[in-house]
Length: 171
Image 1: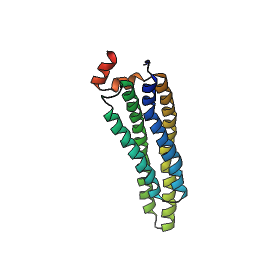
Image 2: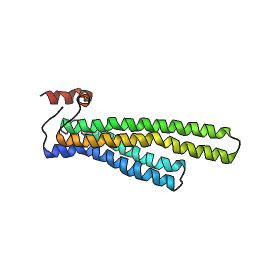
Image 3: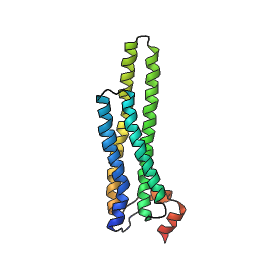
Image 4: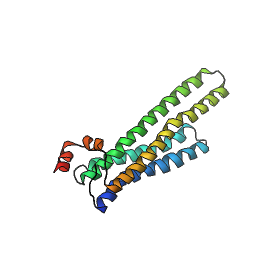
């Protein structure tokens, strides 16, 4: 769906995508590798995760607060960003599952050194689903940022909007 928007609405509709891209860049592409290089172990993965979850929570709260006060197009772009956060949360779940599997497999070995090696390998492998989803989301959010600037929003997102907001669109 294409609409004509002014610069203020365009700027506000780009905000959730800018926040998402900042999350991806600072937290996932910079902080996570830094914690791995510093050999912080599993706690090094939990620190970026906590920051990312806080940013997601902020986005959710912000979307709920603009429900009726902002232009529907701004709300729709916050909704789009939150849908993309779901993809990131799914990748976190896959990463967690791989970490648990790696921990369980490492416990089978009677040699403590081998346990450490196996677990370290699984930590490196388990980060991959999240890293891949970060790259996919980076592409999707860059595209969404461009869409917000042009006054575009996917019809599927418009259909997900609450009824009271969809009524504003038709009027």
